[in-house]
Length: 136
Image (cartoon, rainbow, N blue to C red; front, side, top):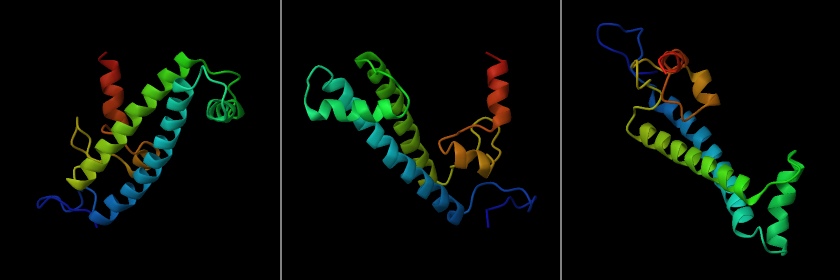
């Protein structure tokens, strides 16, 4: 059961330790996959000019996923984006450890579980994100 405030027993302040462990498992799984993809993209960038097997393997993998060709620049941009994703997932793990995971940094409300399962590194509720986008 999630912790609650003293004056409002039905209002959750944070996710329970059990719930946090569920999210941690999801994040660790995503992190493992993200790191593997990052390595693949990095390999494309660093071996793009050679003709060995290491060069063609990641390229074929990417081509199988629908891309016809991936330039060194595109792979570099994707690798950078993947690296940022990894950093965001690692930051989410830190928030789990300090028990602040799942709390909107703008409103202080709990981010719905459904959102966190889809975007486990989220720090805003959908409403807060929409408010921020309107103000841009």
